[in-house]
Image (cartoon, rainbow, N blue to C red; front, side, top):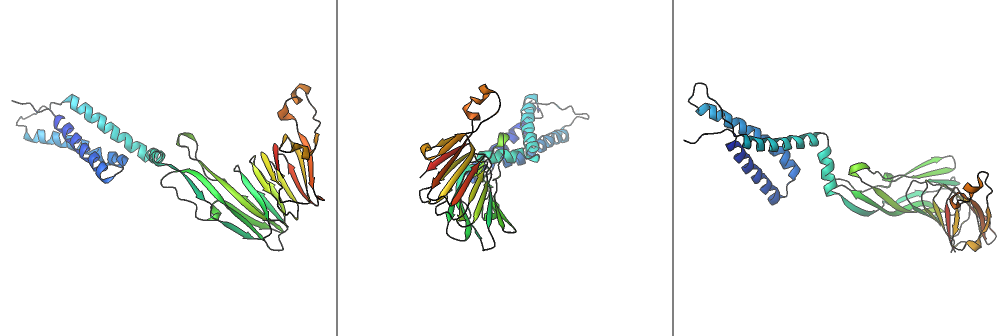
Length: 310
């Protein structure tokens, strides 16, 4: 007579149900992680039901349960995997893994920004982060920003819909402060990054100060009618094709690239170890360049390199 060992029926039933669930995920494009989270408790239900059925059908006064240990071992592995999924899901790890598997790289247009500049505004302070920007002079009385942004995004990440997502403004006295925000990103095993490439139009008759953050800045002053100052950038690219009557003064620059002969350059005298001063990266130079009568001025400080186009 065949001996009933508890666990055999449970393993067969559990594998059958798991196969049906996985088939449904393929047919209806369901989330496999959600299937595993919802399926594994069935193992305990089936195993418990099998024990109760065995005890109910047993004719012995004190029935002795015989187990199929190999089947229960496999059931234990499946159950442990299910419990592991549940724990990872409860602490958010499963969501992170799901996001990593479904993330995509997007390049989108920045929401357009436009801030009117009335006659009371005499100065614009532009505060930047790590992203490269282009600043261009314009004859209009508005500060405008346009461009694109690039992000490694999860499937649930929404695209930017308003300019306030990446720029903020504040007016104090006669100064308009414009701050370009740093886009959010994650580091570590679940890395996510975002960067923007923006062009900022500034009225050419308003003084401007750019506060860099070790980033690259491209300047296109065009018909400049005021003074600009740029501080703490990595590389400043000067496009002076359309500019006249400009004087550029650069202080503490490591190198001048492109038409270096146009500059009047002096090396700074540094005090310290002579051998250390032979390191080109430690040598700083000052330079001036003038077009026309130089009635409008661009001052560049604490920047590593200047690239000239004219």
